[in-house]
Image 1 (cartoon, rainbow, N blue to C red):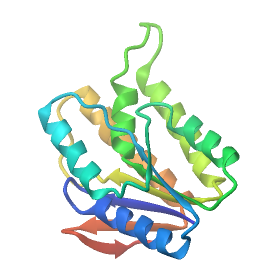
Image 2: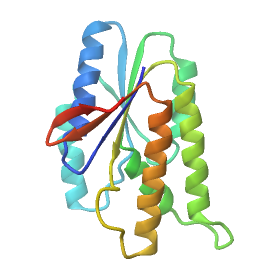
Image 3: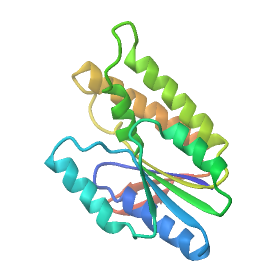
Length: 183
């Protein structure tokens, strides 16, 4: 099953996905939960956020830190494992940020590259055959940002979430720590 968890900052989306991974592990005691973290630590505040997530994760969960090559990691993981798997990816909007903020040659368009990365991810998720829990921010409920990069991020995040919602079996919106089942 492929399950997309959406929500604003501190909405509880990660906790809901982690609870689903715990429940999956109870149902599949011989299975493996793998947590794929996409965050890059840029400052103390981000370090604090990462530390909070680390403290909530059981030591039995495997951790993969993958800020950019998420699709390739999922493809490799799916083909290399024979036992039941639950993959939790947190979070897709940080992954998208990493793509938008990467340094690229002047002749390349970073937004076009990010769009291709999203298309590749959606294609991978569509055919994924293990338990897959995806966490992403819902950033479209606010005002239109002033800066070009901020608008690109908001637009691409919204499109990414729409495409993923289409191919996922379930979609949950987290609001104030409460789950709202959308699909």
